[in-house]
Image (cartoon, rainbow, N blue to C red; front, side):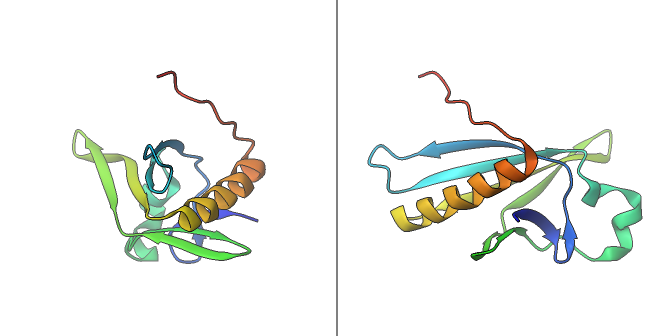
Amino acid sequence: MAVIQFIRGINETVVPNVKLTRSRDGSTGTATFRFVNPIILEASMEDKGDITGMYLLDEEGELVTRDVNAKFINGKPQAIESVYIIRDPQNWDRFMRFMERYANANSLSFTKAQE
């Protein structure tokens, strides 16, 4: 099973839009996650703790990023954007294994952007 958490122990049920970029040589890249109206921003979550990062959890372990930002409209949080930096080919492969599991668990599909 593959899940995403912002506060440990609380699975985010809103499925994000994920945009991947990769360097020309394929060794590094970024994954930008955008969650619109995630459950972690609901009022009922206020007493659950602080958002300390984005945790990508699966049977291999976890991938973590601290680059997590809330987007506000009219003073109310509406979305979370988070960026995971892929630093080397092994990390790329590990990230893609997580995404394949997460996609299968959430009925996601991959579309390649036109260049």
